[in-house]
Image 1 (spheres, one colour):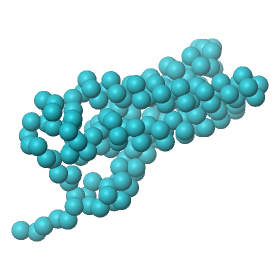
Image 2 (tube, helix red, strand yellow; image 1 turned 180 degrees about the horizontal axis):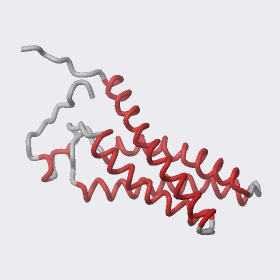
Image 3 (cartoon, helix red, strand yellow; image 1 turned 60 degrees about the horizontal axis):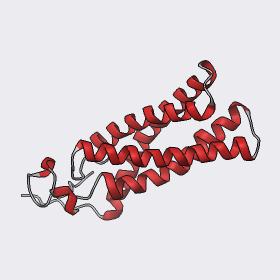
Image 4 (cartoon, rainbow, N blue to C red; image 1 turned 90 degrees about the vertical axis):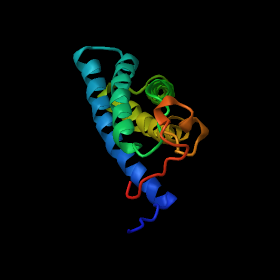
Length: 166
């Protein structure tokens, strides 16, 4: 029987970052398209457009991260995970809105370029760094975390090994 070595923490981090990046890229495209559609076609105020697009993109990101990016991590239940996911995305949205508001209200920059630069590049970029850290810390837990084995979703065993190659 061939024994597979467990991946190193760095290898696992690289795989998670890569998958998180792919899911994030898809969610980013959804965010940018929806925010621009809401703002330019439906004439919504910039902060409202960004809020709506972030909610839709966050749902896309949750599904992708739960089903693919962090699939090897322990489960603690959809209700707990999604609630935390939404709270953390609200903080990420606050980061994006603060950036957008800074560009618009402090610097006085208007127009599509400023909207996209401050709302969809800088704000989303800073929010993404926060979200990756926060998801790993609070939403998609390591299998050894005490909460990971306390919920009904993880009654298989007290320790769930992380598969090699993920």
